Image 1 (tube, rainbow, N blue to C red):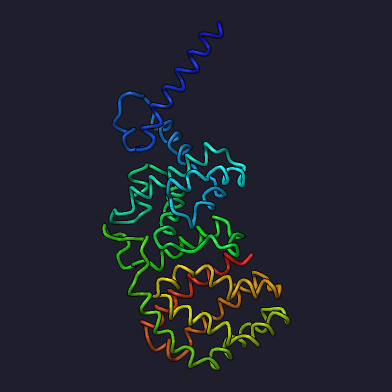
Image 2: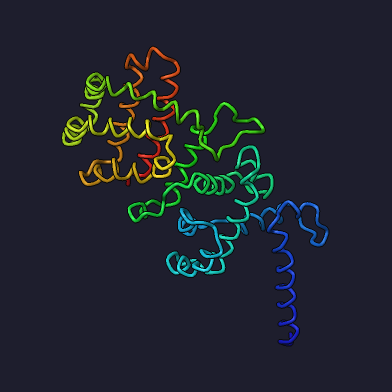
Length: 313
């Protein structure tokens, strides 16, 4: 085949893809367009690949505004992640486009992404987590938090989206899973009474974890129970403040992950202690006699435990 014909054919393919890419920006239009005759499985494959995410690249986007200024700095992201600059730009533009489309839409962000961009469930959840983190404006870019991978923040975000948003409206058209339930954040102040039951709580925890932890770890948690418990409760009491909520990951790292890491506490022991701390909290009279307090405590501690065990590595 003459080189001229081959070159013309390749150029024609590039032109075709350039036209097709514009449709990929709004996948729902692919269902009604007639310019490209595609089988549904081929169409879905192309959409999935175009909107696919590299976790290392997305991690670099978190904590930064999706502005043209940061788009110009994507060469640094490319060098750091070993992902091509073209791919970094595509992913940046996709995240920005999805955020802009679903930000003001009522209803579940994940369902809206699936509806408007025809993405599979897991990929839609990834984008949903990115939108959630950006909406709350969590601090994730501090040097201390660089060790956290996107998968870590994704797990924490999904836990909050399913438990800390307005759970009473889940499934309803107006359910917003990118906004943490303000009423719940104010209710958390009720947990302050647990501080008055510190001795009782400490005894309950110690008696249950004594033979489940290494002696050295048990001694650490036992001697510092007051410190850790107060950190947990004070965090809850102040979480209604915007700054405290945005700094949640930083607070968890500085108050818990960092000291436990320096002491060499295992991830398994962290999970055991937090699980017992949560379950014994339900046994305290100030909690056990109130269905409302049990609900608030469980709703708070289940997410906190998920986040701490995920972040601790």
